[in-house]
Length: 184
Image 1 (cartoon, rainbow, N blue to C red):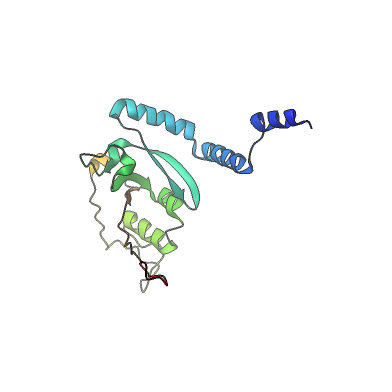
Image 2 (image 1 turned 120 degrees about the horizontal axis):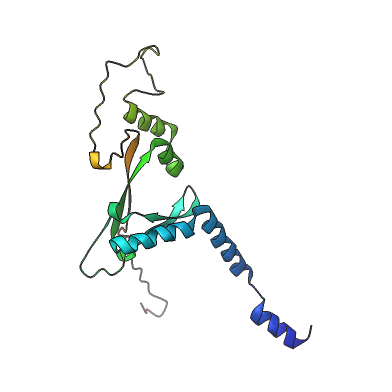
C-alpha cells in the first residue's frame, strides 16, 4: 500500500481498539436502557419543570442510566451551586413493587431481606415461621401501614424506596520525609 493510501486510511477509516470498544459499549447501553426514550421523557421534564435529571451509575454490576422524575427528586441547593452533579447530596423517591425492588437491588439484598419486604406488605411472615405452627393463619397479628395517600398509586403492594447519593469526606494525610541531604 503506498504511503498516500495509508495516510488516507489513517485519517478516514482507522479506528482504535479502545474507540471501537467504547462505541460498542455505548450502543449496548443505549439499547439495554432505552436511552432514546429516556431522553424524550427528560426533554418533557425540562419543558414542564425546568429540570432534566438522569441517574448514571452501576446497577447489579452493569452500567445503567435512567431518567429521574424531578417531582420526587431533591438535592443540596446551596446558593452558588450551578449544576446538580456538584451538590454534596441528592435523593430521589421511588414507589416500587417488591419484585422490582429485588430486581434492582438483588446484589445488595439477601433472601431474608426479600422475606422481610414481603412480610412488611402482607403483615404475615412468609418463610421464617420460627416456633409457630405452619397451619396458623396469623389472623391475630395486626399490621398497620402508615403511608402518604398521595403517593399510594391505588395499590398497597408498592413500597417507598429512597435512593440517595452523597459526597463524603475522606481523610487526607500529608507525608513528608527528608532525603540524605536533609531537604524536606
